[in-house]
Length: 365
Image 1 (cartoon, rainbow, N blue to C red):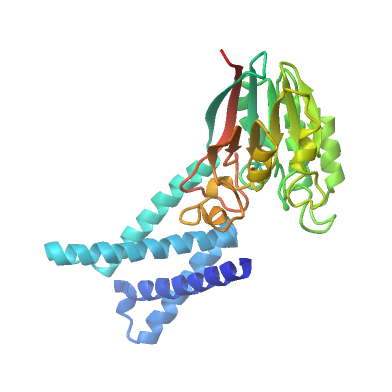
Image 2 (image 1 turned 90 degrees about the horizontal axis):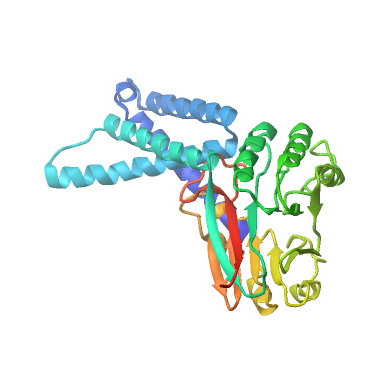
């Protein structure tokens, strides 16, 4: 399936590249060139220079995102131009369509840039007869340190979390990225020391935290990340449970990429009898088992809220995730998927936001 998606993306990219060159060669200053092949060559060189510049400033994949959107908005302008010509007899020239497409792309992706780099707060509240006192949880996920925020920028986001007076802070995976530098990793871990909570900071691994590449590819190891987190007072939960005051049990799962992780049934046996169970599970892929096991609240990330239109729900449609974003209730279990405070590789979020989540758990009145 992934191979088919890659082939599809490459095919769309090739079409978009050809379409953009064709669009450029019809601009008035190129269309006046004496030879047709000269206009094609000039248009190709202009697009290549633009692509190289974007790759250097952003990255190759973000360059591709920009060019795909430019091609899409240029197609949109073709449709708008056809409607205007049919109903008003007004004809929009190639220069006007190209300028319109460029403006739409800049505005749209500019908003996507803002959504990716400005972190909002999302609030939830649940009641339970199992608990005897309120608990405020702040969840953040998918910080991918070094992509959207470096260590200093990440530290600034933690001030927003402190302002919410959390009882506990939970980090639901992908704290770092495969390309996070040692300096940013250590700096981000150090920043966690500044979190002010009543009962601590808890962490579960995501699929990127231990790295997909060789142990030395990042210049530091997963063991060093573990040590840096623990030195900052963070409790790492790997198929482990912690009892919290007021009738709560916090359970942290190994990531779904860890094939030997414990089953939900086995993990629920770790919970204090009659307590309200809070499950930290990076990937939202095990809802049926979690609901069947009687978990009360499951917190996940991983999906980035779908990241970008129109691929927002592809993972859910293909059964890779049980949910893409937000809250869902199955039987007696509440599930929350956060869109995360940052992004993996892509610098834009369209159709979703960056966020941290505030969850207030209160006794049933």
